[in-house]
Length: 221
Image: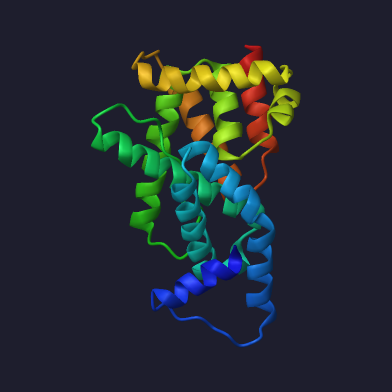
């Protein structure tokens, strides 16, 4: 798949550095190893083979242009980018049909962006997290974030949240239904800000322990 994506860059007139270079070879190898998982993410969100392939291709283009030296976890970077792109495609299609769209996920961190762009992205995450808090139960919210944003297997979600695998699948289905249902629950400002901070930290560093702990604690309340 990586070679196809490289050829696509040539077809679109994008510059390709064909010189042997450890950094470039490493980037391509990292992407190639992650590509099957990225395709699975795109297919699960979009339910369309062609759209999933397009999303993976766009992920490759962003990975090839990224400042990879600042990426702590390439796997998290690639998975989050693919998920965010796929959900944006879904959201765009739903808007065109004038139906309710679920929350979209933020751009993978790019340390070269301006403060204004960074602020816009933070605001988008803030709005998405608020929507999850308004419309989902703590269990639905935890499963949705871990599965959609970070591609956790259902079994691992169950281990983090002390739930059965079948229950986590049911909760994800309910979460999707409730996001479209329009019901609204009151949201604690403190809980909202805490989840935004923790989610952004997980997205930026690839370290998910604090997010796991926060989501599990919400279930216990």
